[in-house]
Image (cartoon, rainbow, N blue to C red; front, side):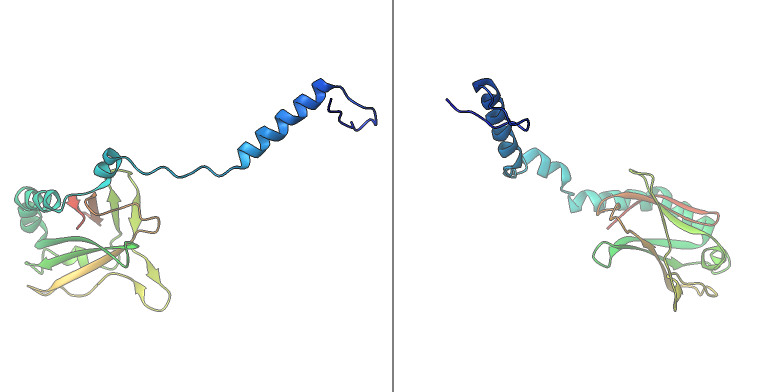
Length: 177
């Protein structure tokens, strides 16, 4: 028969020894590492993005909204790409009409990118010695300009749909390359 010394100094009975053994065993099982489980095929398929789907979504955006943006704002949207190991997003556009595109290159216009899935608003980072990571100059026809947005928590991923807002300019439903 197993006896356990209690804090009071008295010997305890077999019931207390049994309870103590059960507590020790459950503590040992709780500390045992749990082996990682391999992801199932459906989980892997749900996270993978087909490049053909991204290309089709981009073409659809060009046909639908791209023409309206070109006529209204004088720019041709070239796309949004992940950069700097997915820690930044780069929005590129070509100026078609320099007069209409002036608001996009105005340093006083507030710019941000919105992830459609999470609703997160990503701002243009400002570096101490460089300034904002965006171009602000007098627009020239047929020149490509860019604007970088921070993606600190890597919320936006390849294939995500985003909206770019620069002052009054809104480009909605852009697919990230």
